[in-house]
Image 1 (cartoon, rainbow, N blue to C red):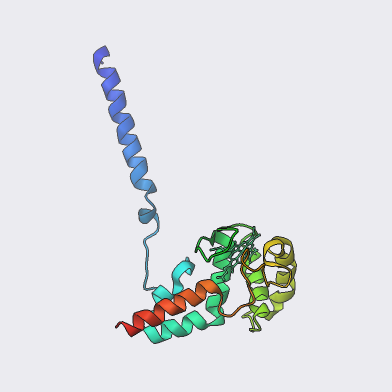
Image 2: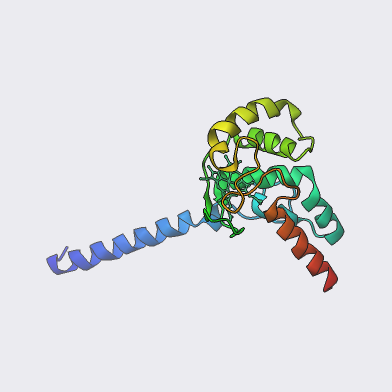
Length: 173
Ligand code: HEC
């Protein structure tokens, strides 16, 4: 091959490779989203109410214990950046590992006087809660007024906002 062609050809193949890798790695290619599938393996926990089309049912879902559990699990995994008005600011995700999250959620749900889906997880959940969350939200879950939110209030602030938004949306229909 002529010496003068080697360099441009090498760049061309490199670009081709990069383009191909980029296309293969596109997230939407790997995992087609199916928003209408309620039992999709990777449920959109961030907005499970979005999957419910009937607004009355959506409101009921927002008030349900199942939703509360998913909300808490989601905050544990991804954190909370909802600007709920606490001096500490945002909560980061990952204070507990994702295997412990459903158990902690069972315990937190019980703090609000609700019966969790898996009451048998409350005890273990409490142990995880005390070591991973109690430092900020308090062992009793009541938080510190103005600094860390009270997790015993029902509904929790983030859920209360969603309920209010839903009621407003229904009223404007
Ligand atoms: C370093 C302090 C800190 C730790 C540790 C912490 N949180 Fe938080 N958490 C916060 C703050 C601050 C907020 C408010 C964030 C916002 O404004 O969105 C919050 C928000 C929340 C909310 C939403 C409250 C609401 O009213 O909607 C939940 C639920 C929650 N935390 C659960 C937990 C759980 C469970 C753990 C343990 C795995 C945990 N947090 C660990 C500081 C903390």
